[in-house]
Image (cartoon, rainbow, N blue to C red; front, top):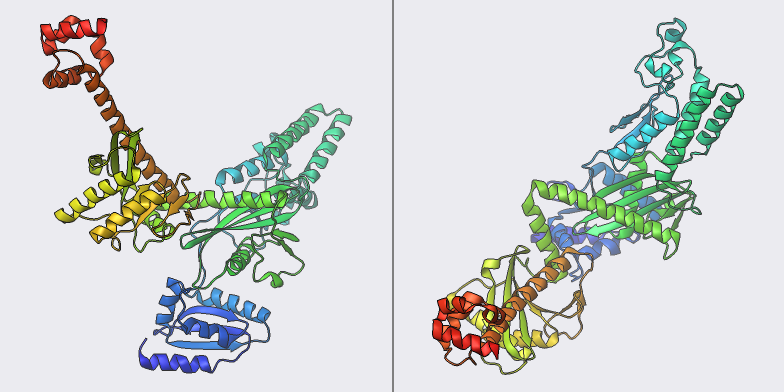
Length: 604
């Protein structure tokens, strides 16, 4: 921002009133890049141009692009909220909330036509038709459609059933009529009023209320039975059975919460997922999840307000009188007659958990689809997530982890495992025999291996890691960090220590552990690194311990020197195998006289 623009901005800010209103930031192309609302315009806009460590990276980038500011004064915060929402929808500014509408959901539509058809669609046309959904999967939508057609007789043909066409006897009955799936309104066998009653029952099903359909089926079944029309009565009984099976399969979420809507937010990286559940008569009748990119300065309350407004408008629905939310949306005052509840426990809290799980499942599907198309996207997202979670300056593409292994001070060894882009790089794994430490001293052992590893890398001019992980608590971390300071690389390479509890991470010169998210991917990667370090170190330690035991045991045999010992180890691997070997097998390795000595030794 040059001096001329800076002075221009300063003048605009100083002229702002202490009133509620909406402000707009423009870039050098005279494009609106951000729209915001404020209770006090001057105070709010001034805050962008005051240096503040709490400013996010997005805010810093936004401020650098501002060349002009315009504002609109309104009478109240509510008016500011309405105007802000309208301007965001109209201009879609780059740094405001952006909706990622990259998925079309299946709907069930009741067509606006004579004798309406009930069909599947993915496109909403404002022609007076009634739409129900959207459904989270095509299989769910098809199951509901199949059930409706099993239970309620409806036409499926595309004939033009105008009054004149029916009156002229233009059409004849089809196979669906003979199968009992349609009452043939095309021939005048069913009046438009009777068909409207059938459609009303379909609407009740789609709204989650099965009582009208059950009552109608029971009445029709008993009426047919009283008329001794048992074949028809059996048909209605089968439909009642289908109704019972469908009700058993449907998601009944509560016997006490009858009508309610649920919204949840899942924040991940630079994306927010908002899930919506519609509950009618205790059953989930609609599910939808939308993806949003938050703006530079949007709170959870503002993100939720935008998502609710979008879902209500897109689905063309009326919210229930009770809406369960994680936070009270900033636009709550715009929804007349609706109570927003943020539950802490009980059935409503369980509904919120269910909605959050649905959002996580949707997020996983989205990421999976994106990462199948672009595998590097997954790596980039994972590395960026680890950078943020561990508070690093750059992504930890190259990680090294150290672990000590000894048994009561015997055969002390250590391991170093290397991960690149979140995956093991096994060819770079290294073992260390502890040379300078006597007895079980993990701290001294850690100092030795870290010094040997990085002094060698520095001598060779090799690449240093982006992150060092020490398996152990504060003591091991302090020992390793002291070595990095001695080598002069403590500011070049970040280091952390892992406590016994996997989610606890220690940083140098800080006695308080930092807790990682238990559900995040960074913790999974760190667990994998630690497990690999354990496995690699224990395998080496076990091999060395076994070899040491074999050597000490066999060296007690008269006539068995170092050369014979090596040959026996190569051939038999273990003391047990040597003990069980025959004289001929031993003679083939160390000669007959030594073989006899071995047999005599073990026979004692």
